[in-house]
Each structure stands twice: as C-alpha cells, then as structure tokens.
Length: 234
Length: 303
Image 1: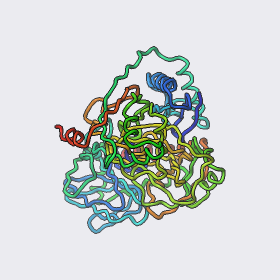
Image 2 (image 1 turned 60 degrees about the vertical axis):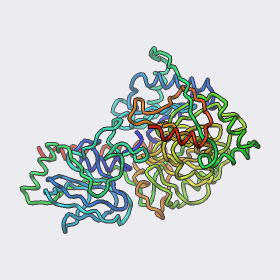
Image 3 (image 1 turned 135 degrees about the vertical axis):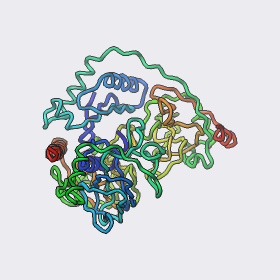
Image 4 (image 1 turned 45 degrees about the vertical axis):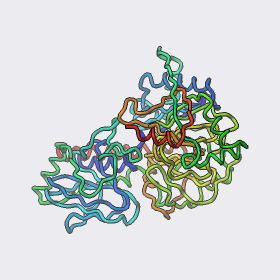
C-alpha cells in the first residue's frame, strides 16, 4: 500500500501496479471500506484500476483536527486506521451486459491502424475484440465511460500521441491494454475501432450509467444497417 | 466534483458580495458577455477578467455590489485582458439541481439552464435575496447610490504569485520524464494554444521527453493536473475535466493559482514555479483565512 499526493487536494492510495482481477478486488474492497462512512475532510472518492484517490478540502481537514503543516500525513493516518478496522459489509454482485458494436468504416477509423500493428486483418481484430468477456474495472473519464479489462494481448495499441479534440459518442476504443466506450462527444486519445448505438450515459435514470465497476461486458458485432435500425428505435 | 465555475473562488466571492451562499448559481462569461435586462430590482456583482461592463452609460467596475433598478440593462463588452468572468445575482439564479449541482454540463446537455449556454431571449429567474442583500439594496436605494464603496477582490487574497507565474507541485509521474524535461517544465515560457475548453488548456513550448515510453494505468485526475501525452506538450486540466486519465501527470497546479490557467487566451504566456505540498496548503489556507475575514466584516455591515 502506497500513499502519494495528487496536487494539494487529493491523496492517491495505490494497492497494486497492474491491471488484473486480484488488484481490482483490492481496489473495490478499499473503496467500499472508505466509502462506508465519511472520512474527516474527505469529499470524494475515485476508484481506478490500481488506485483509490481521495479528494479533500484542506481547510475542512484543518477544521477537524489536521495540523496545518502536515495535512497529508494526518489524512494518511485516518485512511490507514479505517482500513485496519473495516465495517461489516455485503459483497457486491456484478451483471453481464451485451453491447452491440458496428466495427470499422466511419465508426472505427482506427481499425486499420490497430490491425496493422497487430499484424492481423481488420476482420480478425473484430473477431478477437468481440470474443472475450470483459470486466468493468472502473467507470470514469467521462460520465459512464467503462474501462474494460481482458483485451487480448495482440490488440494492445498505444494511445494517439495527440488526442482527438472530439470523439463521437458511442465510440469503442483501445488505449494501451484497455478498451472502453466513449459515452459523450469528448476529446480522446484512444484508437477508435467501432461504435455502439447503445446509450452509455443516461442522466435521467438511476443510476445514470449503463455499466458499473464489477459488471461483465460482451461485444457483439452488428452491421451498419442494424446500427441504423437500433438508433431509430424509440 | 467535476464541473462548476472555472474559477470557483471568484464565483464564491461574487456570491459573497451579494449575500449568497457559496454554491448559488452564477453566470460564467468567456471572451464576451450578454446584455441582461432586469425586470425587477436586483443586487449584482461580477468578478474575473478585465471586461468592459456598462449599466446604461455608466461603467460597472468588478468586485462590488451594484444595485440594478427594475428595467435597467447591464451590457458586457469584450474582455480586454484574460478570458472569463462570473456574475452573481442576489438570491442566485433559479435553475434546478441535477445530481446535486446547478452547474451546466454542456457535453451531456444537462444542468444549469436547459443544459446549454444562454442565448438571446432566454428568461432567467432569480431566487429570493438574503435579508443581508435586502439591507444593502435598501441602503443603496435610499442613499441614491449605484454601488457600494467597498470592494472584495478575489485576485489579491492570500498570497498571489507574481504576474505570469503559476505555482505547481510535482505530480505522481514526474520522474517518468527526463531530468531535462522536469527542469524545462518548471522554467520554460509556455504559450496557451487554441486547443482549450472547460476541460483543459493545451500549452506549447519545449518538447518534454520521457525517460522511457509506455502507457500508465489510468488513474484519477483533478483540476490543475498537468498531463503530458506522448507528443510532449502539456495539458493543464480545468474543473470540467475528466475524472480519470491515462497520460502521465508531470505536475499539479496549486489550487490558488488555477484561476490563472482558466484566464489564459491563445497566445498568452505562463511560467510554472515549483512549490511543495506544505507551501501549497499554506497558500490555500491563507486565501481561505482572508475570505473568512471578509465574510465576517461584511456580516457586520448590517449590524
């Protein structure tokens, strides 16, 4: 376990350094323990692949007892104490969600690039991307963006050196060893290989996101015609 | 905690000046601003960049409470320097809470006023002013005055950095960069590019080289985090940032200096000065103490 500052209002707790299921479980466990009850001065928790980041308000932390010249170490002590004495909690259960994707063409402008560096045909890339059951390691970046683990090694592709200013919503991308879905038109540096007509961010619903950490995801390849039909659904 | 005013401190000060709670909805303006016709009397205040603002034929200075009579119009011209300003109205702007927030999230089309920037003809409602604001309004009205003599200037509170300087700490992946790059980041002149929005500002300057290639595992980011994609040009994140990111975090701007990044226009220059976490906390607490002193002083105005 390692604690690192991220700027003057966040504290990063690292519980591992690789993307794998045991690390994911450690992150989820730490996050659930820390989220079970408020921590003094802490206003938000952001779990990721190997880290749980705690955002704090330095003034609030001082008000509740942190020494002005050592707020960080004081918070670290609070976190350690909480992790040492976790409250009893139920185990969280995940689901499996199927996501239709129209691969390549205008929906996946980087499919060729991914194929080329994997020394595969675009069809083989699609086949291999749609094969595994992925684990939602975390939801973040943009609201509802699922970071999926389980990408076949040969499909790993580095992020673009210069991110696109706008990635269309629903785009399915590969960023290093990760794959995911852009819920909204945002900037993004991942290699875009397809697009889903499924809505990933649903602000009017509870919860407002389709996928949650711990869920399993399977992609199904669909044709541009099926994509259009899906989008036209009421 | 994603979103909200790009300078939340200026927004808090504008709200304080008109007797609002910190989290009351304000208007954010960039580059230029609207013409606002008030259908009823209001107490307003604006803070931020150097804008040309007029009420009728009278220039409207920032950082103070102004009484706008029913039927009067405030006109925002162009920003002369800097980019953004915040306008608070006593009571706050009446927009619904979405996921606990009144701020606009344009990418998703939610929050604020119909989830979008304002356009001509929009009709904004105001919530009821506090009794403190009513008192200030009444004293301006009876005194025949347009605005208060006192001002509250967010930019001078705490211990501001020298002009053109932004203080920053090393980030978690600082050592992923060569020693040269680390030194360059904290000494070079950086130029703001036009690749900028409410998520962040891309800067141009020397290419920041990495010791070795390789992607990091995505982790949390925050406003102020300086990410460096492989092209070696840094991006400083602003409050409408993403919640996690995968580019190495070379540095993190001190919270108190983040407004300077939000005010950069394409072509503006900035230099980063390295500070440690303890200093950043001291700066943060000093600014909060100053704001607290002002808050206490203003509360006494009405007895």
